[in-house]
Image 1 (cartoon, helix red, strand yellow):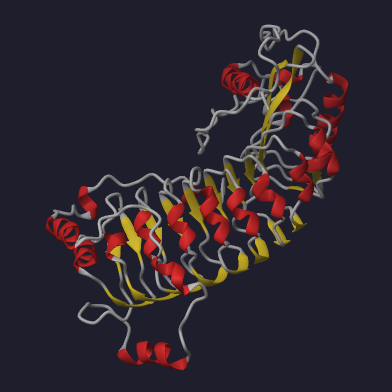
Image 2 (image 1 turned 90 degrees about the vertical axis):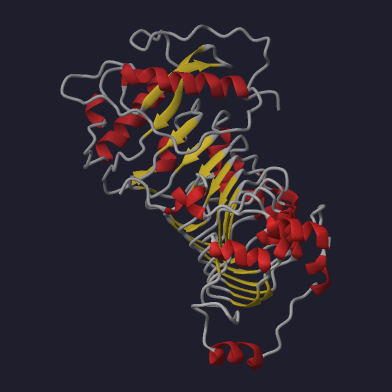
Length: 441
């Protein structure tokens, strides 16, 4: 695994440097990229550090090009199939130097030590055509490292030869026309660190091995995935994970706590998840965003949530949670906006009341006596009397896997502390919520 950082740097430098290259007459310059995600985890190098690479050649005179005939052939085929090109990509796809094609970026191929195609960026191109076969195109780009093609009309099955793309580490196919089962052959591209499949029409189960990929970013929201989330969820090293707006059922896997040292933001909202919250969520010591809004979850909030010291945005709204809101949760210093509305909570302590007064804790439409905008007594009574409310592993709800102030003195000190209002705080800048917006309308 000593094979990836340097090539990542090379390809990114190349991508940035190629925005000023000359284009054939009549075609506009390509726009500057505006990536939403900035990787924070370095990638291992793709080849031994002792290898001396050829210096990057000028784009207009790249010298011998890796797989020139193959890439030109498949590009011409794609060009013939594109019948709508509002961003004027295809008019630049002329001649034999593919480094000058709009959306194509070149750099030195390590194992060949000549110039090759390192990156494709068709983001927002909005290509139209009868059948734009993504797999047929990418499988003929053997040196590709980054393939970004959101908001187009690519479709078709993805087959097993994807694993032969030895440098591929970023794949963005969001907002296209893919459908059917999860494209399992993507899992063969084991160097992937960025996987974005949101806003397609995939359905069925998510394979267990997806969470074994060494990803930084994993977006599969806004599809039709269903059944349970695999128990391997906790294996993921992803920093940003979105499973929102699907049809997942069942419980949140207990294994989520295994992602304690990496997971920063996770979105489960708007699925059909049920059961109770696992106390292992409290192990997510680096998590800043946790959202399970709009599900069928129930039970009390585990006391372990008081260990989410980095938490800024917490959304448990529109579920069936009940019980007392833990004071340790309301004592989290980084809490900016905690939404617990539209549930069946019955009690809040003095710390939580402080947060409510500062507009940082939303408990509207619950069953808390003495607070405004609560559910009617009849609705609350109906919820608690129609069936017995309980959770499996109830003994785990009192587990606190960290040291927090629980003595009467520490709680009194927190009660005396001045809490800023939400308007006095610096708003957080979450990454994952932007993934819920359809890219490039």
